[in-house]
Image (cartoon, rainbow, N blue to C red; front, side, top):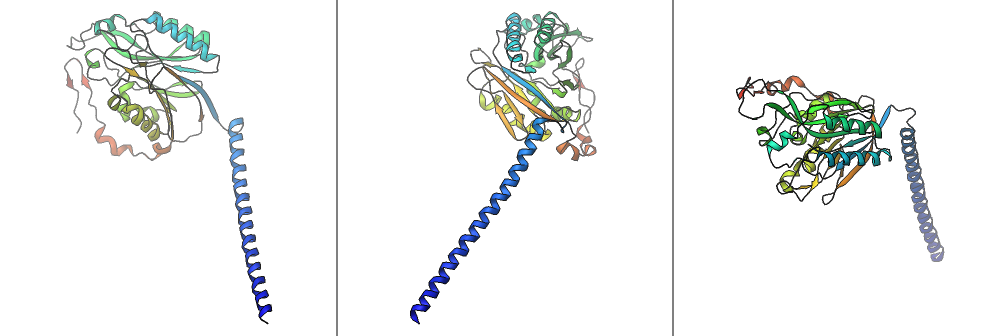
Length: 350
């Protein structure tokens, strides 16, 4: 009787182990099947997007040119534009973007030298770059010093007879000027030289992608990026001249650019120089292409070309913008522009 009882106990223990093993096998099979189904659906969605048959998507191949300049040497800069446009066009790049004031270099010796190198819209240099864009089938964005119209007042600063602008030109792949954007927010030292631009935007289409432009320090003003997004921008490009020390001047690249991308749910690119040998302003790159949930950083110790193919869903997807309540913001949106002839504000916010 004792032997039979022991045998029965052993059998029961054995069967319990088998049941446990069976449950484990069933659990594993179920998990695998579930994961396989999810993976299969995921793969199909990728293929559907890649084939681009049923989705209203547009792709744009861009290159951010983190380069150096020869200050004041327009010929060198134009040759560099042609070289890069030719090389990158053969690789399928559609849009090539250069830093702020790239045509002359940001770090010139004197303000009078900058004014001397200024050019009107459609000047000789722009005509050459338009031809390069057409020859290489490349959309080109670059910064330059624009010589504007005669001033209509005798203000103290800036001292120049003409309005001088920190400007960015957007040239299409067929050689046309799509946009001439004038920097609207200037730093303290820039206020002694340049006239502020008066318009944010407009948005331009580059290869069926709506693009907004702002310049350098304007990344500090979220109102500008938000305005561009509300105007319909699907991407914002920010040519800059962002120098060291890193703990001060690289704050925009590492914090503000990703923030502008996240809060507007669109890619934001920040294009800087690499030029550490300058006497006054030393540039160490760190150009950045920021997405709402990811960033691509350029080198901090060499020139660099950041290349990426961006895909844009053309269906309406406003993200946070659809939940805005503009009436609540009117109290801080009053006109506070200054009259440059009197240095007095037109009106003060309430």
